[in-house]
Length: 417
Image (cartoon, rainbow, N blue to C red; front, side):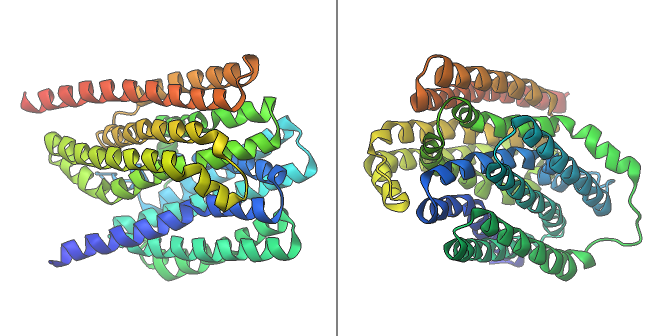
């Protein structure tokens, strides 16, 4: 095995491990809250984490995808970091506005605020991970994520067990993330990779905000689409139903994480292919990824049907057998979402973002109307939330598939001219 393949494998393994552990922390947090506290508190945690994840898209703004696939490299690391600092501040302001509007109880407001700060720290770390990836040391970010994941979950459990106070448990996770971000992410790794001879270019910082606006809207809308049923439940149903929907929805996120595991290490390769105008090669690579995702998704649906509710019931200590079909349908719908994400990566790599903006706006409208009508107005409850999720993701998949095929065909014709 040559050095290039070894480096790719090292990056892939550590990135997959770190991203997996860190991404599944919400699952472990929810299990801990359910077991240590109660199902009502778990419901509050579920909707609060969903809201923090939506706000997280504002902090991420364009995300690492555009940073790593920046072919011209005119925008420097310091510009990206300054931009991320601004978007993280905007995230906190947006979160404060949301809480003022909702007028939750003091306890619920505090949980929302703490989880928003936690996700803000995660977003700021990601821009440093982008610096690592551009320098071909993606494994360093994987190591950082692994450390944050393991220590964060352990500390959350210990503090919650001792105090039975979810607020203190969330605060403990924030503190450990601040320490690791400052010591490892910045001082040990990225500080020596950043060119200190360059000053922050305000024009570049503003250019990121302008040029990546549609990418941000797409990300924001994408997360909202997945969580629209939760907000309908928050408006019309109870905290315990919110927790149950969170339990059966959580395994479906494995589809998203699995897809990210597969796609993320290929971002640089896709960028190089586009730079060389090898669009057919891009289609071949993404097609293979889609086949892997579909196979994994089929296995996940089968496993959910056979043992899903029993397994989740064992984890959470709650009987979920009545929700077997809800679980299977939601996991199946996330196969649509995963393929749409692969198409998103393809279109973003070749810099077609406006058409994605249109797709996401349409999908967001469908999700908002569908979830509120089915959950609230028609009174279908959790079944309405399930059906709304599936319908929205299926329609989004159809739009993305058709648009991607049309654009790739046109791009190839332009190359041949």
